[in-house]
Length: 102
Image 1 (tube, rainbow, N blue to C red):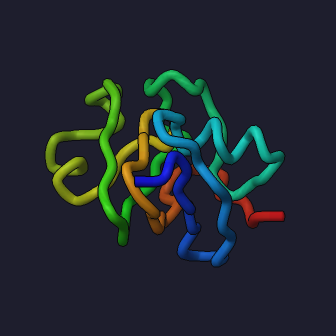
Image 2 (cartoon, helix red, strand yellow):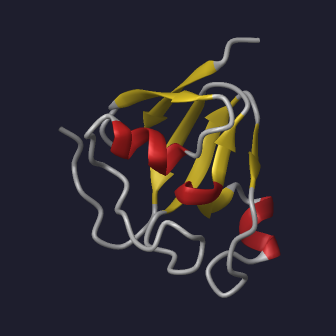
């Protein structure tokens, strides 16, 4: 399996690469892209909340249960700063202050 995956934002169709073991928010920021709002980057504020709507698998790191419940996780909702792709993903941005991609 490749060490880099394509992340697509469903609302805009924007796409950017994310390396294996890199979180989606960091990959977006590194490329100077916008589309997912940026907050604390630590899984606590909920600003970068997204829903995985299609994809080949992912895992998440520890997030605040105040921001992402077990039911949210079951529905594919998580925080982009704690989302690690294991294949290509399509995301819907749910966080506050949603911005269009460059």
